[in-house]
Length: 380
Image 1 (cartoon, rainbow, N blue to C red):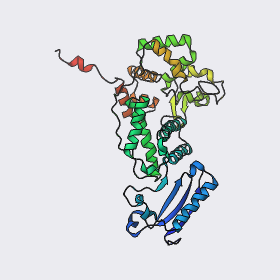
Image 2 (tube, rainbow, N blue to C red):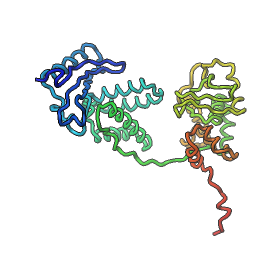
Image 3 (cartoon, rainbow, N blue to C red):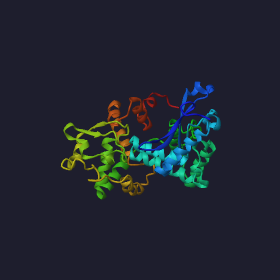
Image 4 (cartoon, one colour):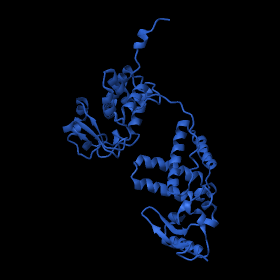
């Protein structure tokens, strides 16, 4: 019979801020030492975090120690510790998903990112609740299981390929975290291929259409007009940046707009130079409380607030779904390039990480395509 400190170290109950588990160490058999070292740690979760009670935790703790004392050997009794696809932690899909969301919150991810992951986590729980599969060990889920999950949802939700690809990527990210945490060693989603999509270029407003839209909105919704003007001058993202900027982010004395890291697309503190037109637009905010939002006052506007206001105007001028509030940024890029602005200045304004990205962005807008070659060509 195994004896503590010779073949194993007695299990202990571990409680962290985000999860509980039972942990023990077992001496590695001679033939596997090169791979694992002399001792290997095992963590047992079962459904401890779903129950999260002292009584259940104590029962699991005692059960693990009793099994070890009675001769349980994880290397002999469990195929997963011998086969190439070893699994380190015995944890259900349900528990692992809960741990992932806790990790996202603890890591301080943006609220929008946590919500996005939350959607796919809820899809996974609901889909695999059939037959209580969600409580199966994570290691039992195969590529075929995950393909059925993705493509059944695609059919059920009538997703286009672009949306389906997003969910494939979200699911891959979640299972990559499971691998990192040693819940599993192989990601069953990793080799699921992305679906083909038609890549559309950035949409911008022609001068004629832009003038009609601006004139119509100005008569009916001053706040929406100012929001559009703000996007035009700053190039900020409507939902994740412009909507969440506060009065304290306007540095009038330095003629700068500060974009804090927690909302910045680059996840770093950024600054945007403010020209006279932008300063004039924001002048009324000078006397407002510093913690007010530039748009919305004491509370920010909801995520889809401005998009909903904008939709009737898009419909009025028969503009397709590709035309969005963000298209005003692309329109500004066209105007700057036509005015002869240095691409480096455009790079700084739009906070691109490299000039190469800016040049590609401008190319996608049809800029930098010279007509000179047509002037030099012979006629047919």
